Amino acid sequence: MKMWNWIERLVRKPQPVELIVMRLADMHRFHPEQITGTCASCGHVVGIYPSGQQVMKQYPDVKLTCSVCKTPGENTPLAPGAEFEPFQSMRKQ
Image 1 (cartoon, one colour):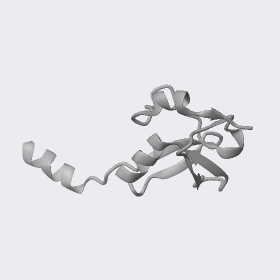
Image 2 (cartoon, rainbow, N blue to C red; image 1 turned 90 degrees about the vertical axis):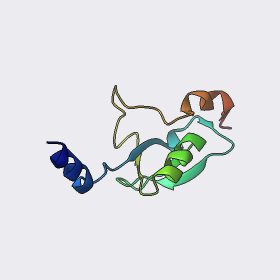
Image 3 (cartoon, rainbow, N blue to C red; image 1 turned 135 degrees about the vertical axis):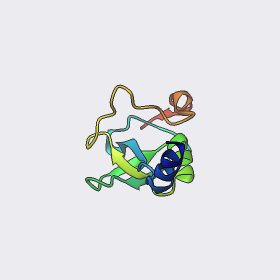
């Protein structure tokens, strides 16, 4: 049984990583270090906070999806460091 588990892990493809972000037009606050990207589903411009940028560095093939195309579920984890970013953000003018 152990041999089969080992072979299964070798053959299994890694799960795709999806980063759910807000559309730039819907953001009421911005982070000084945020960048922009494009939603893979609808093509709208999205804002990517530093925590999302770290996820993008760790997983170069990450799929950016706006929160309109996919609403985060109850068990969707935050990107590491995201819980502190609202305090570092400023209001849009």
